[in-house]
Image 1: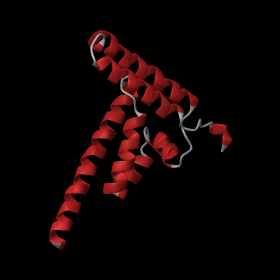
Image 2: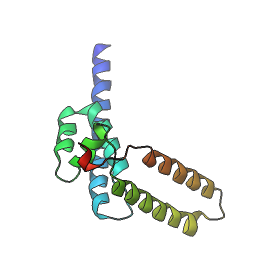
Image 3: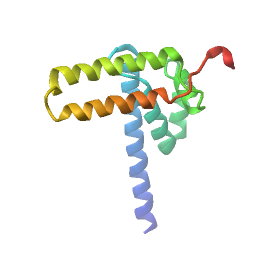
Length: 134
């Protein structure tokens, strides 16, 4: 029985690690691609690495590009006003495009509108970080 539990734990850790690395890759792409938000992927990667590998979580926190956002989110300091607005604008543009060009007039429009409202609430509820306030 103990061996079965340790095998389940190993599979669970590997699964969290795979999801974490996928989120890191998508977050890095999101830094340069305007329609792909970075913050949700970094949050998910932090959680997954926290469950699977503290070393990878530390690597993410020390990363040159993603590290500052990851550290502020982990320390519950929030996002800068610019990061909030960038995220919201990109989310609304990308999801609004999907709504207009793909889902308008279908039952999916309600799901997309609900998702937009939820994502907006989720981002706006973060504290606003001001660099000079430290």
